Length: 159
Image (cartoon, rainbow, N blue to C red; front, side, top):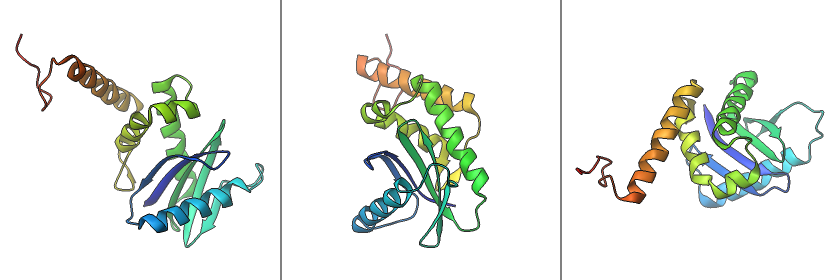
């Protein structure tokens, strides 16, 4: 099971965080500081798995962003790396070539996509096409709501 997901920059600034296990706000801050510190200080040639507080931190760096998942000790690291790759490919498909600014200015979309991929700390959807379709439908619904052509519950208004 995934305990939490963190996306952060090379400077250690968190761009996205999602917790699947309850942590207090103080504990979250402490975790972020420890996790970013332990990952950022590692040499690029080292493996992408770190033991931390009885959990495995599996991470991957893409351009200037680190994608990290904290999983149970018994989880398969390669599958977790594939989950990260899967999420990054979906972000790339949606944003073109995802970069840090995409996550800063469109964090709600990054969270929405993450929620489509992972539910309650488990991989939910593996189809990139289906997720792209769902995100596109959500974008259309938001645009229609901005234009006032749908009701608050998402049903189209009569012409």
